[in-house]
Length: 289
Image (cartoon, rainbow, N blue to C red; front, side, top):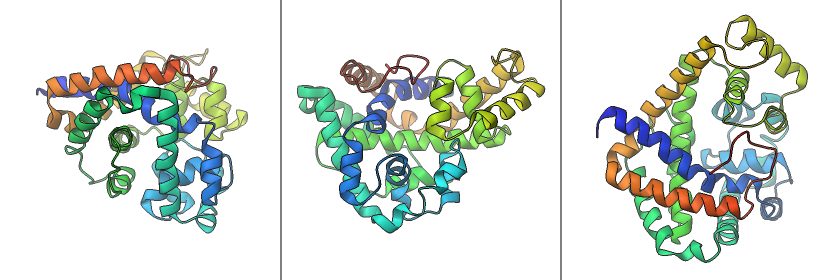
């Protein structure tokens, strides 16, 4: 596979598959499942469940690896979460939640041949991931694989997602884009969170958001209306291009034919969960699938 093809496929497969992973972050069952493991309902469940595969990291480590969250918000929940539940308990609760949510959203399709085929292909793609410089991926990669195909698929997508995300942070750092700046410039593309939901979910105040926006405007990245300037668009294109380059390994491993087949399967499954109400209105600027 040529490099350009691998980069293009990396992006297309990410867009097709990620909605299947991210359903957990909006699932109404989440608080109950994690509370049963000992966590407090709310934001703690997100920070603890995603970082638990790294052991018991401190707030600074979680903020660094999650990148665009306000460190003050992270510190409200980490490391307190580790005093309430062991990482192994949280990980078990997360897989149990994935089972419940995917069965609800996919219905009969959860046990379909399409899911089994997608799971096999996605797991094969993860064989092209490497752990060097990718702390979130490395933590998740050390977990045992589940048995059921729909959970194999979910775990494989999680690994591919965290692998890509670690590389994305590397691209942001290389281009001098901090966490809040990354969030603001991404919302300015019209492809991510709406500004209000970005602030709320990432813990940034209006004052912090406005101050960073002013700095980006002074730097020529944003225009007077908060949109990307030509320099801003070039910056985002450069970051995304480097992200796709860093994410290409799994797709070279899988090959174009299998990768395109996984993309087609994933896109249909993602459309199914979106149609089933996986995501609330007013959160994202564009449809999830």
